[in-house]
Image (cartoon, rainbow, N blue to C red):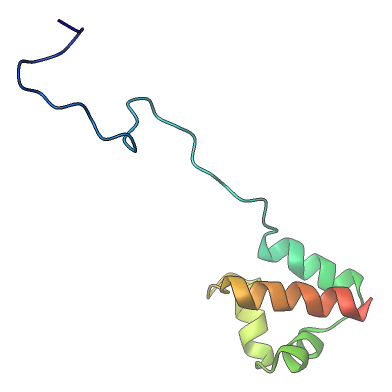
Length: 85
């Protein structure tokens, strides 16, 4: 009999691990890093907001992490900074 096996016990599904695996964390810049990149590109929050068709207040809230930016908006934010440089 296998170690820790009980009669009639089913094997765990293949997608279940018994050891804890580290969670995947993508290498994504933080909003404070994006704000720093915006400032180094000599752009204002209003510049980025106009490019993305959002209000300056929305960009400010993203940078202060008052509200969350979604992935598509974050990509557009990065693109706006890159294209301005």
